[in-house]
Length: 503
Image 1: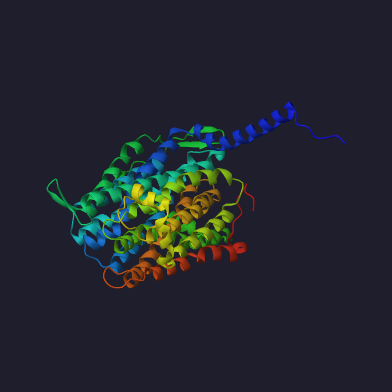
Image 2: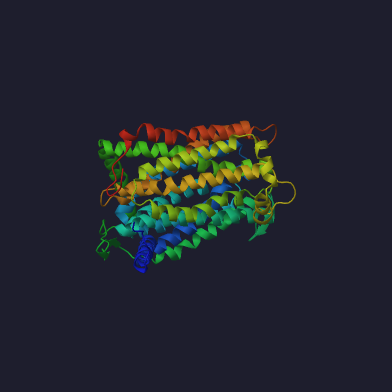
């Protein structure tokens, strides 16, 4: 009976096949190398902008409570009002950007953020810090963030787009990673309630952090300057479309006012028309469900620092703990983005949503269950060399680390796909309008954290008195579970087909 043999030809074929697969896999990443400088500038703008935004996020609630004297409920209520302002402006940004262009909208957003951050850092007056700082900052952030999502599509071709969205998500997390380490570094150096005298002003620890966010915001100006006007990338190459003034013979202020007026009118007309389309109603339902997942991240941005300081003590490395998410998500987002290009964004969101919601239940478990993990050699290394802890390790540390690891895996599957999903179904010429909608889940989640988590923090994790923080996290976990459950149950009603993707 003949036996199978493996000759040189078979081995060569196997090696060639393996090499071909490896080359095909690497090509999914290297395709981005042909992108114009504008796409790389967008990545740099995203990195610096998110670092400033991340420092602000971690500091915001603590600044409102410690420096301005607001209670947990009122501080998080102000976060909700801030996000509500941002939501309204975000819905106008798409039409404004489509009308005046990416570059001008970038510049406007950066300048408004600079003014807002400067007021927040330099004043201790409540009314001025809010009216001249916090709420203008909401306008500036709304002008900038959604535009970057649309810019990725404008500055990339079809082959580059999927990995470009994964890169922008990885870059975003690199920005949050920088912010987390800066947050802990300043608090460790100055103390939780330290003071610094500079330029004739007295800055608290939290206002020093806001000052650093201001410095990062200012550094965005030269990056935006080098964006070329009217550039657009197509599958046939780069095109430069000269910008035509929409209001000839008008002053800059009059042109800007007319643009705002027409943008508000166009946005209303856009939504009035789209609301009559079943596909748009499905997209809105999809995004509203995603908001329940984004609640987890809002909890980590605005509540987790306060929770960590109260449960683990002043100076607790809450920034480094949350930075684990960024450390993991940067490679995970790129790898998952390259591997799942053929699959529908909707299906991946369900998978990631289930994992993310499940992760929060870890925080609701009894802390004593995690006591044995504090003696683990890996935990000892993390505690000593990464977190810089000395002495006994609280069970909350391994508990939080496991939660963040699992959350990061789920995030890598679903979160970049939300942006891609909104951009993928956008009609030509309305990329910015649709991409601005991809931020709605974040903004709705901020409203949720302001209305829900303020009461939970005050009731179950108070500054003084008995704490039952597990109950707070259980409520958050159950609330987050609404997203994957709803996406599964109502899949046939709310899913919109994505061209070129498997169901």
